[in-house]
Image (cartoon, rainbow, N blue to C red; front, side, top):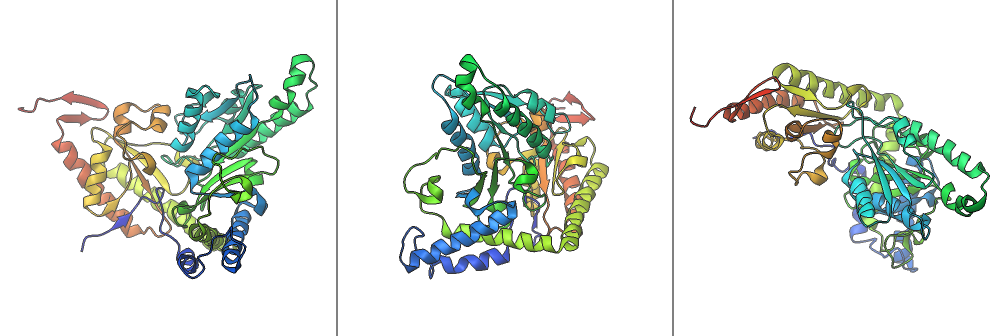
Length: 428
């Protein structure tokens, strides 16, 4: 029987047993609409309320600051579009600061608003390490900046961004704005200028890094259930009390009148139970640290083995500031898609960047922003580990990977020597 090794945990992780069991009754027995006031509806509403409390504990915030969504993408859209709609003034074009390495759900949303003339935007490039500098983000803030959006952990490289540092400096700017004495036209615009919010997409950080709202100093935080052991189809947006936000879809009064539509009770229940299970692991701190350290060591083993057995390969992103479960390689003179397909034939699942864009042949905007060439981006492969990953799986993966890369290079019409290439005619 062929081995099956899953090394694409950044795309999605297996649903936790506790979450799956908790969800079962809500498929049939407890099927009520949570907006109904009869007993069936009240039962469903109570389940959502319980899940909301669990997620609020996970972020250390108030339950009323949690809005359930269909996932991280909707949460990102609600954060960005919702703030722009709520804060915009007639005759004034708001400004958004984000980075050139954001998930598509953020960067494409900002670009769409910019293209339609609703905002102006600044896209901060990262250092070659894969991390943006906090001072670069802050220096891009202008009087009409209303939102800064920086992801917590990059989904392709695993590099951790300086969220708390950025959050602290944004808070200082907000205090200066609010305390500024305005005169003339500036006085008329003071209310507009005083509004500045900070959003972070924490989908890849959840489960490994603390996502406490006050620690991150964020006004808006996006999470996705299936990245932490919950089901697909659920996520949430943390909205700090007092943050101005306009709904992006209208209809009923669900989610505190901020997100219309009948709630996905089954998935929300699973989301709540998944974060409850994660919180239980935190209470056993020593056990969790040991497990996370194990994931980190296995990633280091994967890097060491790959670099030792395969020539012309580089790790993308500074591992000193990387989450313990993600590593991105670029293999010279071979396509990442070819590596992925050949590994899959051997029973090993990996990714060529974000799962949301893996159907695209476009080069990774994240790797390009870090300074990689187009050929280097096309030769990139992301490996992401989980707490279920074993040493034996890593050993087998390195062995197969070395064979796959060698075979693909031997088949190629491009003969590689380090970073130099020589074109060879097919008949030679």
